Image (cartoon, rainbow, N blue to C red):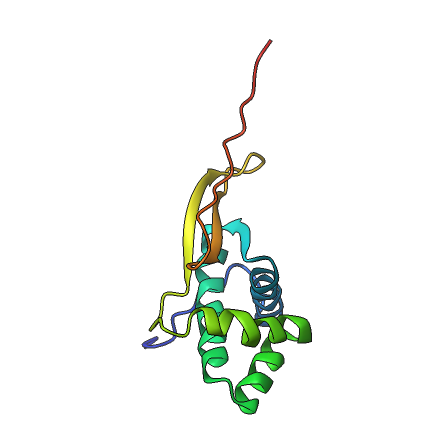
Length: 131
């Protein structure tokens, strides 16, 4: 039986998936929001929330665990210095997913992943005029 084996694989092998998630979480930490597909945003949200939980702990061991996953010292520094303190009073739900509609090329459902402490900014829909 497959009990407890559920995982969103995103059509990638495990190493590719781990590297993609680390890159997405680093970008979220450094830029406060990212635009990606809805399934990737849902998986990245899990990892981003885990990183904030580590940042709220603030110990050297937590910092090393975050660095082992993210691999970017500047992202870890910002995570522990700013984002962990920004969400110190929250018990969870550090990120939000805002759906923005289909992508133009392949109609994949797109979303914005951002921290809950930031203002909601959604891009205006592209207007195409036919002449």
